[in-house]
Image (cartoon, rainbow, N blue to C red; front, side):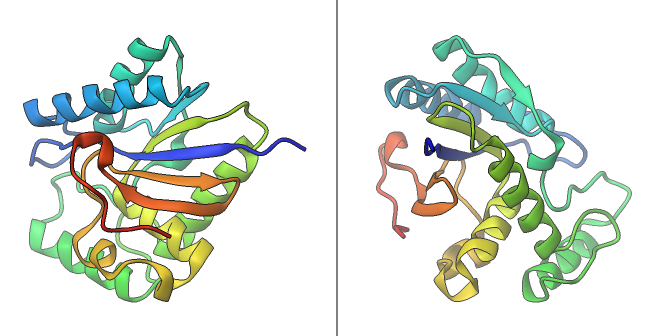
Length: 193
């Protein structure tokens, strides 16, 4: 049985607006650096959340590697603020979902549901020839890590501050190898499994 290495790529820095925002100028530079890293890492398949910030992060990877972007809705974020909900209400629901993995927000999934959705997606993709780049979101990545490792093993900084833009979390099948590396962006990762 072949083993698939997954590189979960947090989308690049997004514009601060509700809905489905695209990347900032800095985010586009982060995505370009990540694309170069993906090419050097020999990525052989590319999947992305359908949300714009993830697709715009995946596009330079596709251009650099020559791979098609395959979208999968299971890679979407746990919650996405569409603008109908006030920011303070959204942030309060997000915080509750972090504390209580079974809390279902007014729009989106519970932390446990999102973690299981991500786990099931990767389990299904495990037959892909790797390494595989998976462009996704910070909340969903943390939810997956909580599902795979348990809360105590997930760095507190990730739970409190989120995953840095374009950070790469590496899994060997569903075994966590490295968490939120930003070394390819020229700053070391404080998170290693």
